[in-house]
Length: 173
Image (cartoon, rainbow, N blue to C red; front, side, top):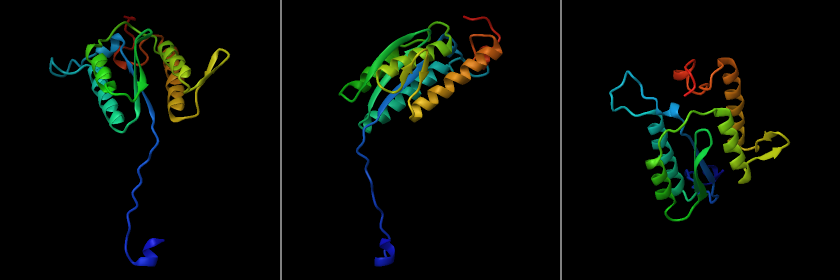
């Protein structure tokens, strides 16, 4: 204890030197085009909010010298940018987000399975037989929770819109 020996407080600064690999995954299905009918006509859609959040996360990660990648999906992966730390990566991500639009309807569980298979190739998880065994990290745990929760919601609702309560019970787009 430094204080006991010197009668002065010290602040120890630590700067971590590990580089993380960040994969931003954004749902680009038709239901993400939802805009609240109660708000102003120029209110943001769920997809626009998602794009702003993805751009912000990419900005922060790049400025911490972490590698950043982007995956957009609807029924399949529509856009993918490999995680990199090179110059221009943020501009590339912002360009893709700027021109992206909500696409087709999606089966969220199947789409999430495609995303995890893509990420598995990049070493985040591994595949055994017909079922995925997600990595032990936070991302693997989160994907597994979302995947199983969504599958249960789809079964109970009987619709393809289990991830969007606003569209539950409506016909599949």
